[in-house]
Length: 398
Image 1 (tube, rainbow, N blue to C red):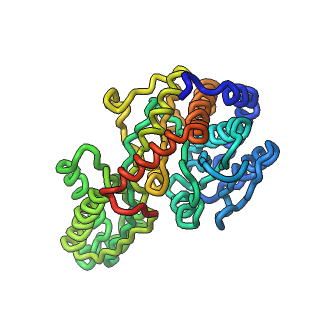
Image 2 (image 1 turned 45 degrees about the horizontal axis):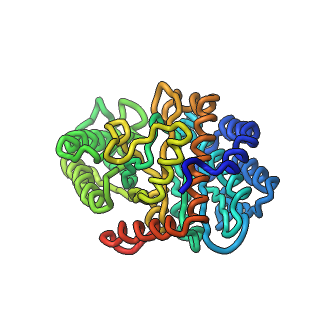
Image 3 (image 1 turned 90 degrees about the vertical axis):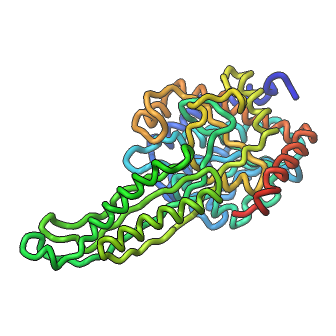
């Protein structure tokens, strides 16, 4: 292992810094939702094709996925890009920076790798759509030895706490009536949803600190003087493991069923998927990233050194990837007055400081990936850690 990232990697990324900033801002200024990232898909694939990559657009049957390839044979390392945005608040998770970092690392590896395959994989719809889940199912990670990406956040960590997450959609069906003349003839569907919402709020008192439940009411009636005959809501359930998530599903479902029984409404629910799995950070790869990140000035803690801020939970479909191949998903810090998924973070994601941090994260990521090509012991250790991590979890699944 080197004491610092290979100079060729650093020089390549620094030389492309201005173009990478233009690319990042172009994506930031054109926020696009799940599976609608047509502008991002176009500018990213054009950039990579002009850099000499063999680019497959609309890859694996997904209109906004892509594969950019350089070289051939083994090892094969995939650097992942994300580029979807959030409703109303745009790139409030900084996916413009993730896309630019993936491209930057790909450029650096192309300039340095002499044997093996470099993949820059464009993965749409992370914000709930599960683009990576579909890519796994369609074979995008077949033959890949390791998958790496970085993500902006308010802090540095190479071991983010990533929770498994699944969404549930609920409807309560009641009976409409005039709220003043004949309320006794109605069955109030909104009451059922409010009762379920409050039951979930009480349930939170008896849940582990790393469990999360949150939801919104999407339909609560049409006019105050009509007893609502239909209410609807969407909820997300998060837990540290799939086993804990399965238990949480049953407890939350009991809240919905109890509310239906208490109000006389009929419950309809569905789990639309996809389910995001918890992340199994590959320790050998993460340790290399930490070393190279520290060489670039990042104050990245090791697991035993992490404080409460470093353990703020999140969820991502990169967790599913970590069940298929050795993977890491480090967070790099940008200066922001708000955390991810806030307007303040969206503004911070276009700043000069965030761009500089992204470049350093991309250098550390590229250096980690380069070691996979040039250090057989690292790749062997990564594979061994991957196998050990799944020994008690069953066979990898998508």
